[in-house]
Amino acid sequence: MSHDERHPKLSVVIPAYNERDTIEEVLYRVQAVEIDKEIIVVDDGSTDGTREFLQELAEAARHNPAVLTLPRDGRRLRTDNIRVFFQDRNRGKGTALRRGFQEARGEIVLIQDADLEYDPQDYYKLIEPIERGVADVVYGSRFHGGPHRVLYFWHYTANKFLTTLSNMLTNLNLADIYVCYKAFRREVLRSLELKEDRFGFEPEVTAKVARGGWRVYEVPISYYGRTYEEGKKITWKDGLWGVWCILRYNLFR
Picture 1 (cartoon, one colour):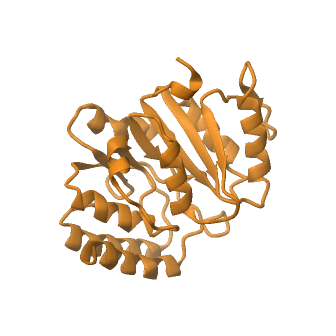
Picture 2: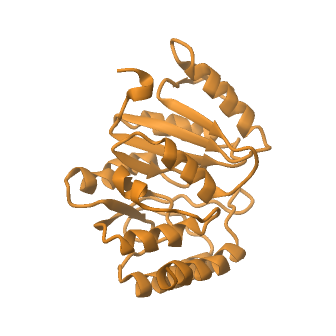
């Protein structure tokens, strides 16, 4: 079977915007997970060197052996199962995810941020309910048992408010709708018409999964949160937009 026809168990979709300090390590950790997978990276108009690194990566993936020596520490990264796509400008996380979902060939599609806030070793827990045939969608939860860095009380409070509002309208009892780690059977994503360009993706996809009657599970994950100085991007404006998205996608169809 050719590389283009291959259908792995897992597609890992990584939206990346100005993550030059972390992208190498993230890819190395994702590649280290021993699951049959493809890695789809979508650069969302980066200007900090991320794009240039990913262009090197894409070039390395075309060669045999498909290996890139990482510029920062000399480790070797296998690249034959990595595909890279480039947005013409910064369009937002939701847009990058839609492009990645469109390209995904795996039975299960999982979202991975390009920072170091999440541990790819949690993939096994995330896909297990889907593999067992009891779930169509699995959300990670940063608040259900895994180790997590202690940060930002008001972020936590806003997250709980938005999650509660979403739960009231979807009738799901999720703990954490804004978590990055979400895994989907590919058929689920193909059934959803997603529109949000930024972080509104999170309440939108939750509303549409609930409306579709898909089976949703939740598993505890680890979380190593970043400060704004370390590159965190979500802001209070995204919180306000989140309220609108929760109302829009649940009440106005």
